[in-house]
Length: 198
Image 1 (cartoon, rainbow, N blue to C red):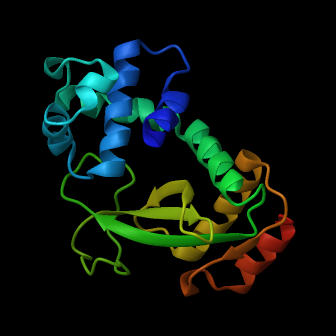
Image 2: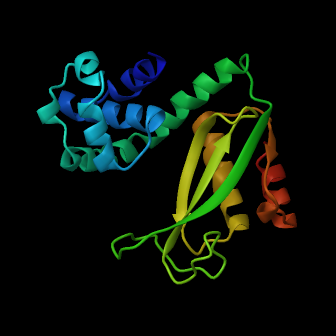
């Protein structure tokens, strides 16, 4: 199972305990094959074949453990992105010629998210709720390899400079063609992209 091989590669390194890594694998596989809430993920696992494949008893998987995994996964974000980029690059014959970038907003209920901000320009048509901005990069086939999260009141055009700098540093990119939606269109953004020599 390719998803299991990918999760093994990403989560088998580092100093975290083995059970911690196993829960990360469960969460990764669940998101790929049967996406839903984290609570749903724990119930899904108990009814799946994964218990036998991963050799983790069903009583050791619960939503509290899954929620604790999210911080660990965020700590591995750059490693995950580098690994996904490597896979996507192999799929494209060793070179990515086109890189598509898109942004969306996600609103939520709650007060604890430090980057949640209200924004009149919400894509969800919910200016009354706090939101975050999610950026995603994919190859021309739509395979994702990079993402970032920004404060909910950040304009699309202001994400370009950070994205270009991060992608160039993290993925050691050669020259590629970046495709943005119209929210990115500005003379400043074009200059930043050209200045980064992507």
